[in-house]
Image 1: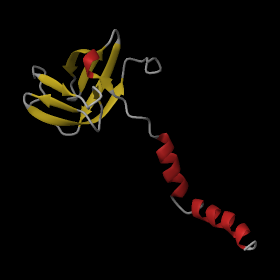
Image 2 (image 1 turned 180 degrees about the vertical axis):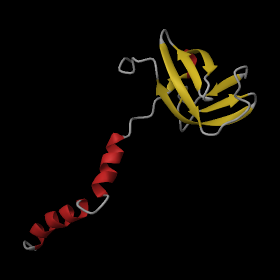
Image 3 (image 1 turned 180 degrees about the horizontal axis):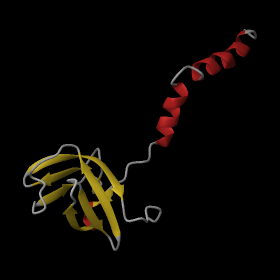
Length: 119
């Protein structure tokens, strides 16, 4: 049994040295945590030229919401509703945006006001 113990680190090293193993770990570490927006703090919005929704929340926060699919319902004059998760947050996975009655999935949310390090 003692002879098997030194082989374990060698096996682990071989497994981590396999092509792509380190890249996969680095990719997971590079992922930023999902950005969510408190729906009750949103007080304005507009649609930019790319079809993204820009939300204004709180005193000076802005968020770019990229939707999963393009839709003509999301025009500059569209009526939108934000459908939060059970915690009241609009998040990429658990929140939805409704544009003129059509429910649209959210691909990503990013803070764009230049002060993402402030809460």
